[in-house]
Image (cartoon, rainbow, N blue to C red):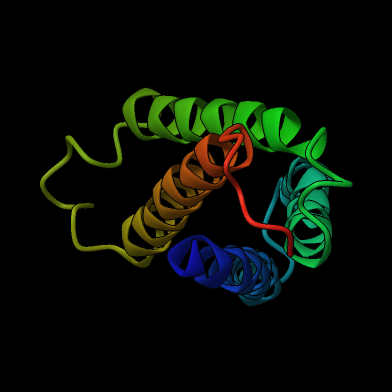
Amino acid sequence: MNVFRALKPIVFTLECIKLMVIALIIIIQGNAPGLFTKIILAAPEALFPIMALFIWLDTKRYKEYLPLFLAGKCIGIFLLLGWFIFFSQVTMVGKILGFAVYAEGLLLFGDLISLSAVLLINRDIKNPEMEEE
C-alpha cells in the first residue's frame, strides 16, 4: 500500500512538470504562426495537475476522477502519436534530432508514466482490502 501512496505525489509532480514544459515550449516559440491555436489546444492540460492533486489528497472521495484521468491520458497519448505520424517528425531523418521531437518525446514519456501510475492507483482503490488512509 505504501507504494501506491508514493505514486500519488509522483503523478502530481509529473503533471506539473508536463504543464511547465508545454508552457516553456509555447514561450520559446514567441510569435510563431499558429501560436494561438497551440495555446487553445494546450489549455485543457491544466486540468490534469488539478485532478492529480485531488486524487493525491483524498483518493476515496475523488475516485470518480480516475476514469476521467485515464480517458484523458489515453486520448492524449493517441493524439500525440498521431501528431508524430501525421507531421512526419519521426520518419524524416533530418528532423529526428530536433528540439520538437525531444520535447514531444518527453511529453509522451510523462503521459505513459502517469497513465501506468493511475492504472495502479485505480487497481488499488478497487481492492476491498485497501487500508484506511
